[in-house]
Amino acid sequence: MFGRRERLEYSGEEAPKSRRWLWITLALVVVIGIAAYFMMGKQDGAATKAAAGKGGAQQANQSQIPTVTIAIPGRQSVQTVISGTGSLAAKREMPVGVVGEGGLVTRVLVEPGTWVAKGQVLATVDRSVQVQTADSLAASVRVSEADAKLAQANLDRAKGLVSNGFVSKADIDRLTAARDQASARVRVSRAQLAETQARNHRLDIRAPEAGLVLTRQVEPGQIVSGGSGVLFRMAMGGQMELRAQLAEADLLRTHVGSTAQVTPTGSTQVFSGTVWQVSPVIDPSTRQGIARIQLSYDPALRPGGFASTQIITGAKDAVILPQSAIQTDAQGNYVYTLDAKDQAVRTPVVTGEVTDAGVSIAQGLAGSERVVLTAGAFLNPGQKVIPQLLKKQ
Image (cartoon, rainbow, N blue to C red; front, side, top):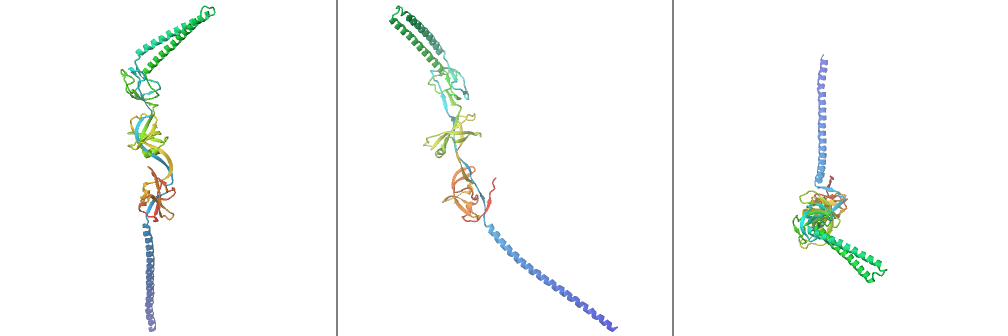
């Protein structure tokens, strides 16, 4: 009995000791695990911090490089346009007055704006006296023709009697002279009649050429003569023109045959014309000359009106850039282009015509370069940039 009890008591003491060692082992494992976790976390944090520091430096360097807008302009056709203003007029204005002796105007047959043919009667003058004179001369022609016929008949009969000895040679000569005088009087009478008829024809006021009547300065019942001045004004063929005033430098660039667009003042309608004459002289007081632009007839083109014009003197291929891309300093005009490393390169240029599309570059660019369009004023040669290509609309 006693021996069994001792064995039971011994077994009860061994069990708690085993459990203690188990818990101690578990605790050491947990402590080691926690320590390892913190050590690895610290290493990862240092690596992350180093990586973050490196990326931040790169980001800071990147933020210091400016971004610029660039374009590859290419080449395009550029028209040279010269602007001017002037007054509208008939290309060939014809003043019409009294050609003959004049008289009392009986009828006026046209109004301003009427198209007439060459020789058409514009107004008639009373010719009652002149008609009677013409009739009298026509009768004189008939009388002289009858006398000439009688003289010829007398000469023919006398020639038939010469062979019989009834008429002498002297009689033949006298009859021949009488016949010749009668024929001459016929010619004189006819000439006088023709002169009178021509004078009567000139009493009518007629159009010298086909065209458009612009003004009328005569009314029925008015007495007119050679000193009455201009009674009608006409535009030959109805052709109009703009007499554009141009500066001396622009006049030198304007050539006969250049096309032009004309816009009358107060109208949006545009008319196409052609420069047909360039003034050979310059007004010494205004330093301007006149370019005459021929226009086809249109009711909207009224002589005396004011109009503006754009004359196209030629076209050529050139590089076109906006004004913002061109810089200027003491050395002249220049632009910034980018090299293969996206570094700014100062490129001198010579500017040409200024158009609605921009400024043409006469020299300095081929059109294939990458040109800085904006922020050029803040760049320096060799400076690194971030290019941003402008998309064409």
